[in-house]
Length: 321
Image 1 (tube, rainbow, N blue to C red):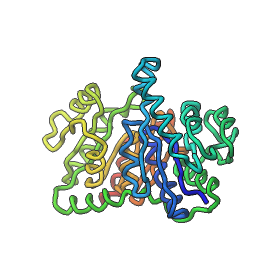
Image 2: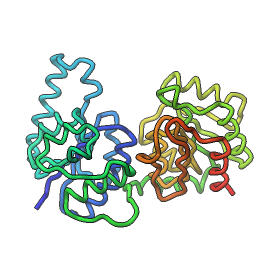
Image 3: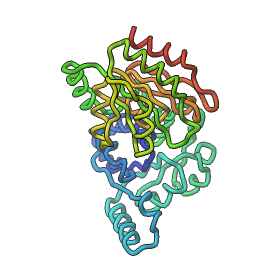
Image 4: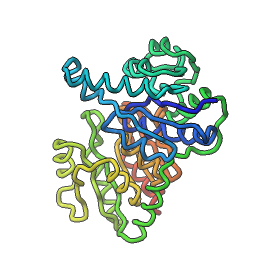
């Protein structure tokens, strides 16, 4: 019987959020198993939120690659390898299927599972698994992760996805009962081609103001902060939030009335927390990464075809009216 399991899913933020329901499924089927999760250090809080995760093992690949051969980084990589080998896992499941995850998988003991050649985003990764599973590529990420876990452990999942975020959801409901309503806005992205027009954002803000809602705008760096401040200039019931750790961001999202954001990990986290959420897709497709959650969700637009102002306002009306 499988007792010790290692999940390899190191990044990105949205991908880790999409992985959470599969953890719930595994824990339901194997309640006595110990589930550890290998994740990028900057995102390690996300796996720790799930009550079924025993230990989060942090990997520092993003930091290491800046000085891969330095003595300090070599020592850290050695320490990670020794830690993983000492765990003696029965089964290692690579949910990423990338060449950058394979070097981590190869540090471990246990039977190594992953996607087969036709299912993996980087097919060569499949050559390094002991057991390979076929999962259709063009389907929602949450479903794909649940299917891979089910194939690995030999069960069929059922029911809506459970993200295991009940502690945040319960606190958020309590906070909403004590405070004025607000909307969280995520207008920033790493690339210019992902941005939505300023005048369309202003139309959304006007609609939220009519509903008596203040705005809390997220920004990840100085450039995003400046853009966000310009976006809300002159609006008294709007603020750009300072940079916060992921725990604080999750609490803010859980206590919100709704969220409108570009397709980003935080927008997907909002949906996972059960908040009414609207995602604006412009440089990515919702076919593979739609919003998933217990609350109202609208995944609008597509790659090269951003949603119209009217489409977003229409989705807002479904939440507010």
